[in-house]
Image (spheres, rainbow, N blue to C red):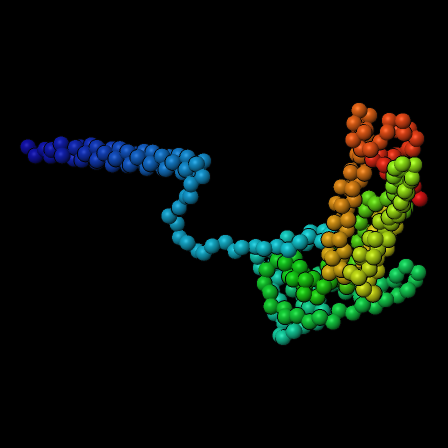
Amino acid sequence: MGRRRSSGPIRLGPLLLLALCACDVSEQAGRDIEDGTRLTREQLDAQRAAQRGEVLRVDRPYYGGALKVTRGSRQGDPLPRQLEAARGVSLRLPGQADIRTIAAAITSASGLPVNIRTRYILTGGDVVEVPIGTRMRAAYTGPLSGFLDRLSTRMDVAWSYDGKGIAIDRMITRDWRVPLPRARTTFTDEQRAGGIGLSTAQETDPWAELGARLAPLAPAPARVGLFPDTGRVSVFGPPSVQARVGTVIEDVIATAAQRIGLEVGIYFVDSDKADAFGIALDNLGATIGRAAGQGLNGP
């Protein structure tokens, strides 16, 4: 008879292999669950820390800090976004350059045309030419508006962007609204004692006073225009003149507001307290606008 081969060990092999695989899968699943639980816990801790305003430090490679962007002012339409980045434009000119050389460099770096205005037509048809003779060093990398503000400060010019190109003006015109009386005002002071009367009058012209204060601040070819009928002041001049004139006009507006409030308020006097202002009750209706022995007469 032939010998029969036992198939027992051969049949047990796949069962052992399946058991080992099941153990590995179970262990891996356990590790994945632990990792997921840990990551969830870390994310929750980070969210709570962020809510408390704490600083989060991430264990990741450091490639340097973000570049600080210091943009300039906005004059007209906003400049293109790519020109307002941390490295929007890069200008490198040797030595001290004039305005036309710098304008050409700006066009080359940004692709925007630059128009330089130094010729102006004044009221009456007169033409004035105001050159830009200042030179400056152009070594700059950053937002274009920042360089234009630096150029404006150094050369005393104004710049603006209209969506198509940049304009550099040597002179600009600016208007202010000034709430001053339209004409001269006369104050009359009358005092009587023992049948003897003394009357004094004082005349004020706030627009003439304002013109006298502004005239030294705007030397030729700058000009100051006063328009009392519409309550406006128009100034033609470089940005430095506009800044000085603006300071004076703001002071005049603040002072006028205080004086108007004082001079209007003093005429609303309670009749029971009229004697405290030196007003006799029988004279309350004698003169319109008289208070404390003072009358206000128009021009």
